Amino acid sequence: MSVDDYLARVLSLVSPTEIVSLRLTDSLGCALAENVVAPWSLPNFDNSSMDGYAVLAADVAAATADSPVALKVIADLAAGYITDLAVLPGTAIRIMTGAPIPAGTTAVVPVERTDGQMGTVTIHEGVDDGAFIRRAGDDVTAGDLVLPAGTVITSRQIAVLAAIGLAEIKVHRRPRIGVLSTGSELVDPGTPLESGQIVDSNSYLLVAACTEAGAIGDRRPRVADDEAEFRAAIDSAARECDLILTSGGVSMGAYDTVKAVLSTLGSVDFIKTAMQPGMPQGCGSVTVDSRTVPIITLPGNPVSSYVSFENFVRPAIRTMLGAETIQRPDRMATITEGMQSPGAKRQFARGHLDRAAGTVTPVGGQGSHVVGGLAQANCMIVINEGVSSVAAGDSVRVIECGE
Image (cartoon, rainbow, N blue to C red; front, side, top):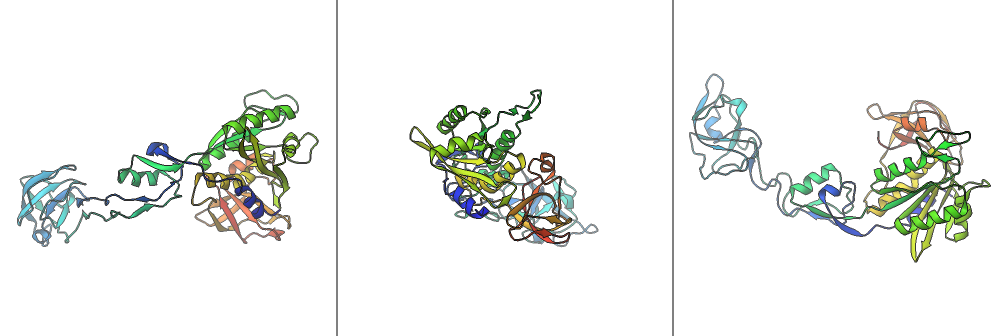
């Protein structure tokens, strides 16, 4: 099955989670469930963009260092305060950044263009009408669509949401993703290795990737190659999670427990996808106590697991979040080294993208077990089906995966 067709099958299993109200401080990484409209303008009053003096621009138009203008200072205005006094010809009001513009003011002279005094201020450089005044609505006008539904909340969005007075927003609940690693050879980090054992890196990788995607990664206890134990683990996860994610046990091995157990449930399909790495895949659903939960099974090699997550699981999580954009950003870049690729499959090679130079370099070995190379990568180099090689200097598509 093609990568695109398999992704469509995975996405058909999921839908956005229910809508909840969250405090701004708890909403980072969630997606808005409704449009946000500004209840007031930003700024909502004319204010000064500089520390300085509110003046009539005509009074100081001719001011120079050799021929300064002196004005009487009639008030001192800090941010958060207002004054009933108006600026009249020959007068000025000292004003701080963010303070409301007094009546009569046509410009603000920055303090750097003055001697900074009270009583009488000497101005040695003029300003134009409207200089250094932030007008109400310069940024956002009341009634404007500030953020559309589906926008994923970052620190930048939180800033504007707070500025328009929202303490809570409606978002789609973060899905809980149950992550199960299978294999009797696995041990936890920190455990001394015996012959034939390997450290379980997959569950840590996948829980972190779920968190990065905006979900709650729930690392479940490791499962040995035992069908009864695996059935119990699936049963427990299905009761508590919105999606189950397994790694390992989906190829053609004699002890591939995941495939053996889930094949008997009748609702999980195991499919060979036309991709490298990550050919063996599986998806479907399991039902426990009338609760049906989607499940995605990934191959066990760490790089295969990661590449599969990026292509299939991350878009599913973003769909569950209600995000407007579910795919990573991609771009074209010039590859610095030639590469071979299986012509019948879409290859996802690990690379390091130099964004400034617009070049990408393959990193580490491209084997499905090479986590050292994976750690050096910040993108995946995509070589499409039908292409058996690319040469240094060719333009290739890269999917950015962050630093």
